[in-house]
Image 1 (cartoon, rainbow, N blue to C red):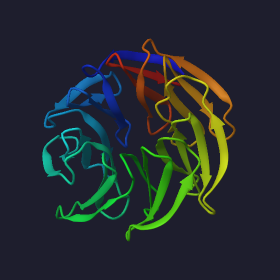
Image 2 (image 1 turned 60 degrees about the vertical axis):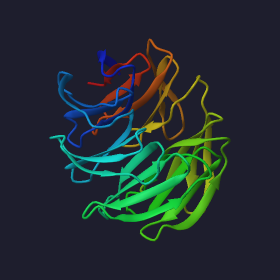
Image 3 (image 1 turned 180 degrees about the horizontal axis):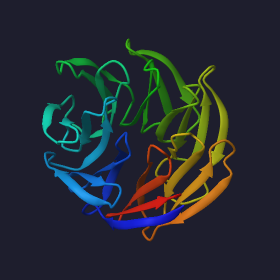
Length: 292
């Protein structure tokens, strides 16, 4: 991949990155409480959304692409019309930071992960609370929903990944194998696997047929901030100190290291076609690479 752009997105730095389904818009959030939309062709700023009173930590888009959900340190989840940016609903379940939000693929719910160890789900139809429950002993920082909408995975501070059946929210199992904290949950291979990264800097692929560890790979770089899987699942990007490392997902073969001139790389995202990769740095800059 070759670098195509580098420009300022947030002050002091950006946090979450997300492409629209058509790949034409990049959504960024930052410590400046803002959500911004960028045109991918020329990386021009399309709009800036104000509403959160503290950092905008995380975003997700609804399956139909008409709603955007954001979670913030101001202790709220906001729903916005997309791409217009009008706030339609604001939710609060706990008086604590919201670290993760995700839409269900087929049930019309928005789920959120909160500091303190809680998960809350609301109906998009009428705004009612579907379920709120304690999912972790401490903070919930990562949520993932299987593509068939039947399984929720939660993790955060603590060594466990917990699995929950939807729509009942009954506990389906626990995955043990990390230390201290777990992040970056992603379902793979038609929901046959779940991939996670632990505080000990190991990436684990879990076989969900028997809830066993299938593969484990260590990360050699410093301060990894998660694993981001390309849409076709062939490439894994790992943002870390001074670089984004690319590896082949199947066997963990190193492919390329994309240098970044800042020690902290907060996150990364692939475009829907997998040809563009973006990363946000601790210097407030976004870097964009393309394989074209």
